[in-house]
Amino acid sequence: MNDLIRPTLYNAHHDIVPVRETEASLTPADVVGPVCETGDIFASDRLLPPFTPGDLVAFRSAGAYGAVMSGTYNARPLIPEVLVHGREWAVVRPRPDIAELIDRDRIPEWLT
Image (cartoon, rainbow, N blue to C red; front, side, top):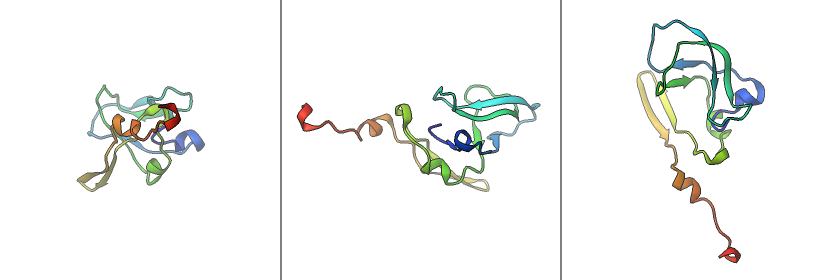
């Protein structure tokens, strides 16, 4: 929900694939986010290989909408953005840390 809200807003479909290739059998799976809201679902009953904690997945075809529609709901920092071209990749927008997020807050003088 924080990072890619299009599936929640209007059922947008994004291919979701493991970053590392696998020969494992595909089984239906739900892909959900970390916010624990009812709309925090990226895919339902999607045929995917089994994953274990720490495995990385790629959301394909997210395009520019990942960044411009993302937010910091529940004080979650924005995701890092990675640009991939063939076998080359680069982090083009790093994830801000929680201190940077909190540093955006201001306390009015009349409260100090």
